[in-house]
Image (cartoon, rainbow, N blue to C red; front, side, top):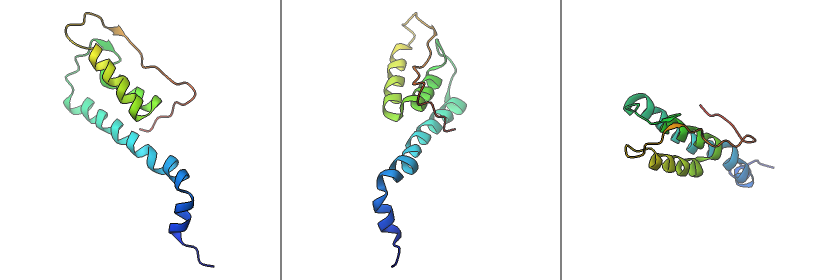
Length: 101
């Protein structure tokens, strides 16, 4: 009886997709935001935490798609015409918080 790696991988595709491949998309998005924060940002945001930090936390807590949508909604609220500002924390999912940095 010969073990074939491809047969084993085909049987465990769902497990591999969840545990191996899925975190890479999240990690790439978070690394791009960190690059923006360190090298391109002007640090002029009306809110605390900043918009990029808010998006980073949303991606970490809710996943890539929902995190980016929440970040876009925050970018639309943070503009020079808007006189609002202050403390606006990212919504957290307390049962699923996992940091990947």
